[in-house]
Amino acid sequence: MSGNRNSQFANSVTLSVYLPAEYYYISISRMEITLNNEPLTLEGESMTVAKLLELKKYTFRLRIVKINGRLISRDSYDDEMVSNGDNVQVIYLMSGG
Image (cartoon, rainbow, N blue to C red; front, side, top):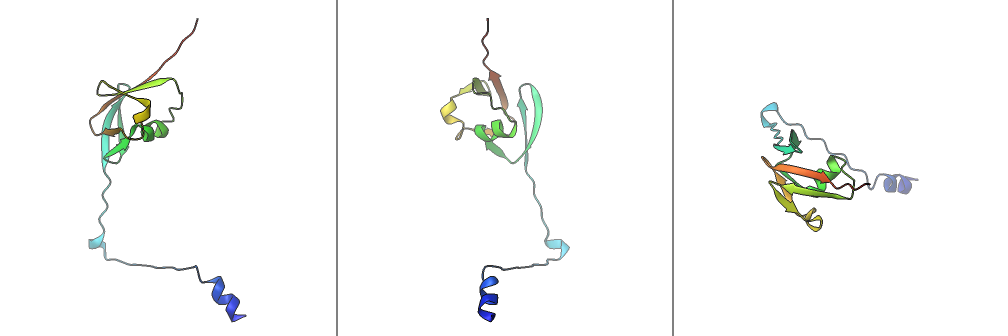
């Protein structure tokens, strides 16, 4: 029975660390951008266009994205970064009759 008990706890590890208050340091970086002419504060120093679109739930496929007036290709959404102070435009393309 002790063999079963040892295997039950073989993958379980708990570690507690207590530090005095003077060792606590929390830094939360934020960036401020303009998104579609509205100020927006986001956590982090920068993020990809893809992450911004996901965060804002912009899922409509027929869209273009501009950062500071520069058109961003859809293939670059995972690589192109939005940073503090950027002016971002997400424009939906519509057609109708």
